[in-house]
Length: 241
Image 1 (cartoon, rainbow, N blue to C red):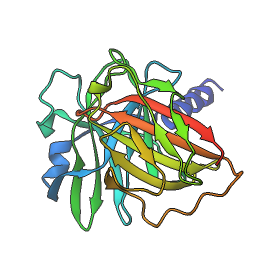
Image 2: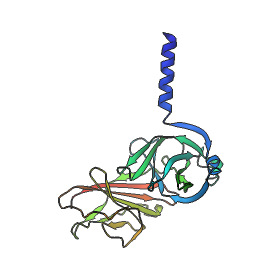
Image 3: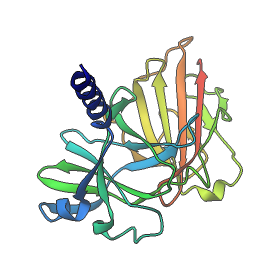
Image 4: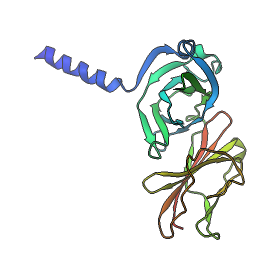
């Protein structure tokens, strides 16, 4: 009976750790096997909303990509551009905005550099290094956005946060209450108007956004992202046209 109990505990421990396992595979090993393209993965990371040890990495997987992987350094003091410093961590990959984006959650008390990768058309695509700051500059979650609906069915979203100079760019999403992404855009300015691309510097919406329906609830999300791809502010707010 004692042997059975020990075996059962071992199986449980293995199954619990299999989804969050530090690998001995280094990014340099993977890079050596592929033709490489850098700075071609849209990705960032934020701190947890409740758990102060949690980070959430977000990545935009273009159609047809495979093998999304997460690599991290031992700490934030090492050379972020040296691939030998990054080891893979095996983590669950979850859908975000109904799979339009993917997110990867990781618990760590240490701030590090991370790189996300995937394979596209036989080439290894790498994100820029992402600096985790959940201990020194955690993400601010808020609903502080003004929604101007003077123009029917084309709401204008305006936000003004403290320390805005920390952010290099803003990512905006308009979605349904079921988290289906309707539009996904990037701006340098702290405002975005649905269905207008006047100040949009990058548009990842795959199809023409649908016309909003009067009296139907929707959600709005903005991430303020720094030059080292850390999400300083995460704004979420529901609205009804």
